[in-house]
Length: 70
Image 1: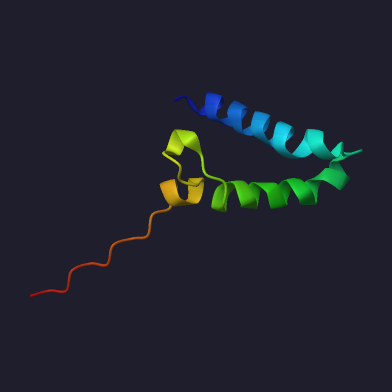
Image 2 (image 1 turned 30 degrees about the vertical axis):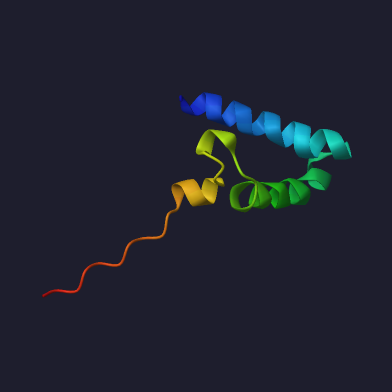
């Protein structure tokens, strides 16, 4: 999926799940709550296009420890 499509979908989600629900007056009022929402989105909100994983689970898998030399 092209990067632009992903970004457009993300901003649509932010608008519908955060911005429109709170009707912020300006950018300064919205900055901290949108930051909190992005942390939630990346770490706790399952994403159907990622097979129910969060973005953090899908893209930041823990590194497998290297095998000890024999």
